[in-house]
Image 1 (cartoon, rainbow over the protein chains, first blue to last red):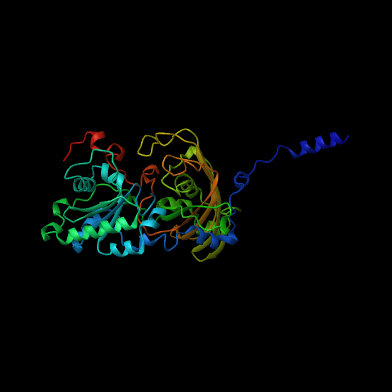
Image 2 (cartoon, chains in turn green, cyan; image 1 turned 180 degrees about the vertical axis):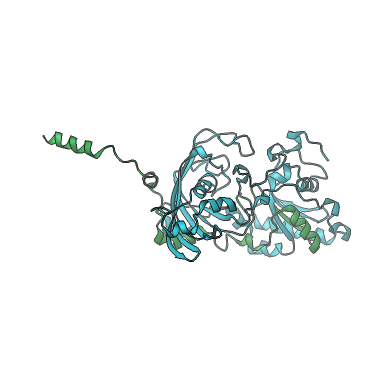
Length: 92
Length: 346
């Protein structure tokens, strides 16, 4: 009798609900830090580069080789050219 | 990016004040056949085009007339500083005639990816950073990177509802659906590049990408929304983005999933973002050829911060956006070296 009751109840509930994308991510992200709205200011400070990270950005870089050449010629100064795989001011 | 912190000491930053400074991407300059590429190759290679594969990365000092005054590829601030000092010494001995750019050499390139900057659209700066499993209670990792994300004015306008929609609540109970932005982020921005350049994802590799804005305040034409979303992308041993300069020689499984939270101020009359700040925290696993994960297949946590930028730097994967509003070069860069293309050398 108990078994029959459980079976009927299970059938009435239908198939198990699919997890939402957020639930799926949560379940497979065990161990990842939790992102909560109340912590967003702390996350901003944690994620953004600090002053030492951004010392290079205090230099007024022209964004291209040719722009740098033109500026060097105008200002009568030597050109310091920084080259990397990926733009040095972006993703390298 | 950790290298930048170590090289650019206060002393190096101060020394740089004696120079006109420029930064650029080396791969295109040393292999391309655009005018600026040819100029760089001639200056750096004794007047000839570069045909070998050796990298020209690092710091160079040129006179505006094209004379090499110094070169070094080093992470040591002392060695970089010494090179700069020696280059200044050579500069001081240079005749005036060699300090000018030859007007004949001042030829702008026909194409740069920056030409696609989305005027009136959405330009985001994006920071990625490795995280500790302890999250905020740990010190920030020094492994971080930066990039940009673009959406055109038309893409943004199409994404946002008109004012009446929001005020009537017809944006739906979940809020404003920012699916195109979610897709762009999942494909090109929420990628594992905190330790070095990685690969983007093809649309078919995005398992899900959602971003919605829940309206929290309406102030005339401006609407404030709280953003929330999630993304998951997974790449197996296939490359689905065609034959181009990103095509990897080895196809290595990797993936990432993120939760996103943030806020934005929308101008519904203009169809624009007046402000946006978005943070993502998640898990990455696997590796790509150059992203520095050879001994760190994970899974491990990673975080991202995105906000508006006026920086016109092109997104790393602009060439793979697959949109017509970003101009493409007539000659694809990946077939652009003299050795590969057979182009006539000048």
